[in-house]
Length: 403
Ligand code: DI6
Ligand code: FE
Image (cartoon, rainbow, N blue to C red; front, top):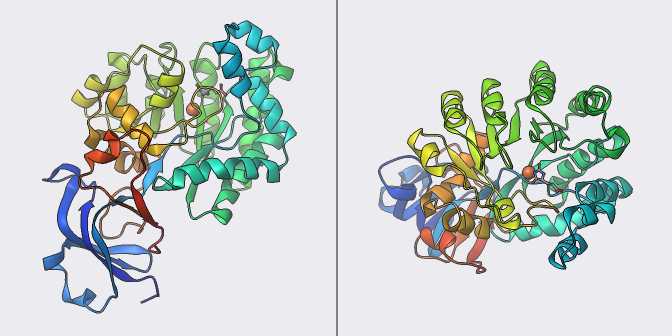
């Protein structure tokens, strides 16, 4: 037994496992942590004798959940877009903002202009805000470099976050996020000459866990995304897609046909898309921060997803343009208030279903064999986590078994 082996007691455990009780809740529970993993969880009175010698950590009746998982972020990027936000609120049109150097291309320029050390320094405060609200795993996408050098830099920086903070990073290659200015009007050439070769280079460096794209009128067509997905599949990499955010191009169906881990945004998803996702087991990743920031009115088809048993995850989509959001708790609240998810669906969306959206089976619930990444909250009931606005009841985080 190592120093961090212990028995957590005086707690209620929202295990988030599928079962008889809402939230998989166990009142007066105990959790045995051995070797950085959960060895046992159950009612305290039933704890096996084999854990009797473990040092006890009493949590004062608090609620323990799995550490939260943010399965869709763009947390590494250069600069910010606050001025653009201000310009728009002073009446500037999208075109005027664009001409003043705003929009996604301004973030590409700032990202290319930053060193890896600068990108890391800018990302860490955002990560810290998330960790302060109980996060244990963050997915980070590339996609603001859009050339070989800058895409690789973004992915390396994402990986390096793990060296500086107690958090697990999952990286996603999003070369098909936008076409850079130097390839304006030559989208296919960008894919052929930059996007796909960079995917190969990043994969060779071990920098990619999955491949994503942005399927939209203003980004890439389904046929172009299919080329990116074919390249990913040839490398054995799982895929996911920004789909049906602003219009319905059938992106989610395309993603499902590739067995995608997730289709994300999906405000404009239709019945055929829901059915395709259900059949493929593709997770619906809902992003209320972008919905809110864009003042979108088309709601994702939550009822249909529910009826078809499509697992729903929730994420911040933290990015400088459409979702400058670094609060997992506000994301839970927005999932409920804006999308009418239940608090249990919202919390499942940032734990068990978020893990599934990343293709991970070792986290997202409190169960024997899972990593001991936990969040301890000073609340009475799990619904409080989604209910409050701008209040952080995190007591502590347990990461790999250590408090
Ligand atoms: N969907 C979005 O809303 C953002 N990217 C994406 O794939 C926009 C990113 C930005 O404006 O910086
Ligand atoms: Fe996104």
